[in-house]
Image (cartoon, rainbow, N blue to C red; front, side, top):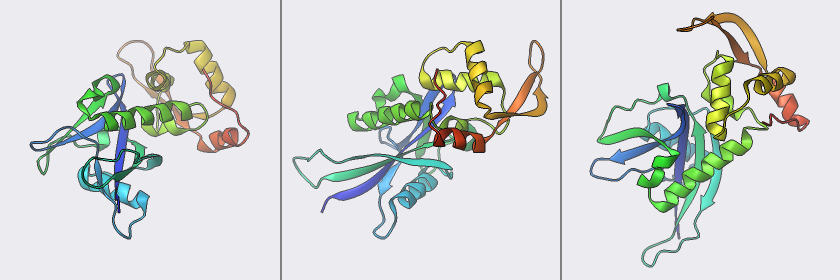
Length: 216
């Protein structure tokens, strides 16, 4: 019987880049959080357990990505990888080494530290995130509860990998009505204070149901 494992891609926005959390056991190489599936354990529960044990957090947004298992080794049993990806704020993850495990956030261009299959898994997760950004609220998982319009635009630009026209972006956001002003402001180092907004998930759900998209 082939072995079955779960592999998890945890992503965040940090330092103007979309980054993935990698682990390095003492004396080992960088890798994704991964572990065997329990005999009577649902797959998602296995992924949640691996993240809790190896990263020390609970991830609210966790989605099954893909199953890899076509490679048949010359020796030993085939292993089937059930892959999940999740979105987390960087502040949730304690990067201090514990139990001999190092943790660090890697940008896409730095993923060559991974074995080819794991690099492929991360790139597929990045593609999935970019694809879902236009028709779901997935990107808001990476924002604080209150945020500025500049922060929102920067999030979309980082994930999509391109610059967006400020006027067109704000007009499209206003047309969709997915944000609500909190009435609060954030003091800026220079210029006027920036208004703070919150996300209205119920509006985005209606947009999804009728096929409207946030395209740029």
